[in-house]
Amino acid sequence: MNDIWMAVLAAVIAYFIGNISPSILMAKARGIDIRKEGSGNAGTTNALRVMGKKAGAITLVVDILKGTCAVVLGYLLAGNTGAMWCVVAVFCGHVWPVFFGFRGGKGVATAFGALLGLNPLMALATLAIVVIGVLITRRMSVGSILGAICFPVLSYFMEPDFVHLGIIVAVIVLVKHRSNIGRLIRGEEPIMSIFEKKDDSREQEGK
Image (cartoon, rainbow, N blue to C red; front, top):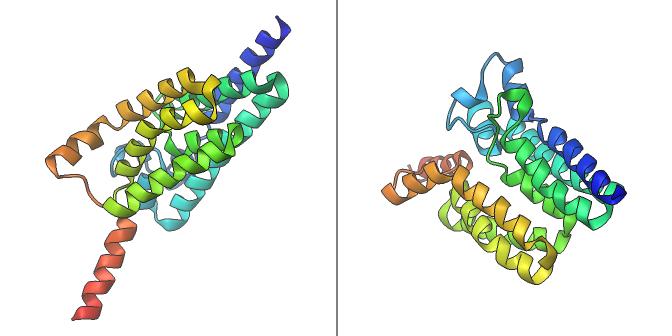
């Protein structure tokens, strides 16, 4: 019984760790609401688009680290069960942060950080799929969607006890990307700004 309560405690703490949103906080320091700018998402891609490379990098690192720290804490408090619960809890804390009106990001970087704490090999395998999708299409949303689709399959082979919770995370990621999916179908999804800059430089070199 104590193990269950420790897992619950770990999950609650993980949820509040997930509430830490670097993109929202940095944007507020500049007098803007990141959720009303660009794509309206409080994540790395929109932070990069709205506030530049430095803000994007800080957002990415903090979102990953908070996922990893929450899961490691869960493991220390309640073993592997606590760690698995904390993956979902910190992810949900990022997506639906109580401190920011339950309006957060899409959770991809935080989910990766959480998986890194649970099973590094599975996290890196998922990351490889995401990176391949991004490099081929130059769209972060495609990599994120592919990662979400493939993640439960990887979990089945590499972390079978996590499959059911992993499916929950994957479904939430896909639901949060429903607008991106719609734009992809219509051919309206923009490429990442870092690729746009590269294209511009190439055009200038050709002139």
